Amino acid sequence: MIRPLAAAIEAARAAGDLLRAHFNQPRIVNATTAHDIKLEVDVLAQNLITEILLRHFPGHALYGEEGIVGDQSSEHQWVVDPLDGTVNFFYGIPHFCVSIALRFRGEVIVGVIYDPVREEMWSGEKGERPLLNGKEFRVSQRTTLAEAVVSIGLAKTQATIDAGLPLLQQMVHRVRKCRMLGSAALDMAYVACGRLDAYIEQGISLWDIAAGLLLVESAGGRIELTPRTDMPDKFSIIASSGRLELH
Image (cartoon, rainbow, N blue to C red; front, side):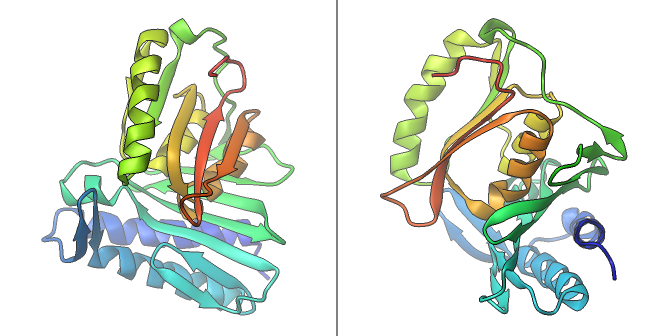
């Protein structure tokens, strides 16, 4: 039987190929809000991921941005964002990814993030050193905020935007550079491999960060994850190298 990590890599690569093929094609929009867009390709990519994962593991559950599938009583739950960075994708900005994680009894044990534009595959499983295109990586070794590059997410609601703006104002004076890149999963992957020193967001969904949680911690970093009491199924997160004083 195929290992879960291998299945996740297979599914991420297949979905990434689909996204890359659609990237320069006309976009079909399913829904829009003030700060977000839902595309038909999101659904197509999740359907492809679902088909691959549940073909290999028919008894598993899948919890994704585009809906839930499978046996929801299962101890194994795949957590999937088929296209993280949809707004980037829609506007032709080549910075987006596929994020796939597997939880066992609520704990993430497999994580894969795939950037199909740069063909970068971050992969890891609990207890093992994570890999980027087959090579081990670690979080940043920088120890001072003055040398740090930090990504600040402003999320999609008035409450999270209002909370994020003061943080951005504070951080922009303390760190070398602040960035807002538009893909939470890639921000997590970049923290894990040392490109960023931290990623902070006030309101994020599990499917955006599940794979990244495992990758950051496996690479020696630190995660501070707090459920939001005012927003069901949303979290505040600080993902960092663990070497900086961010509070």
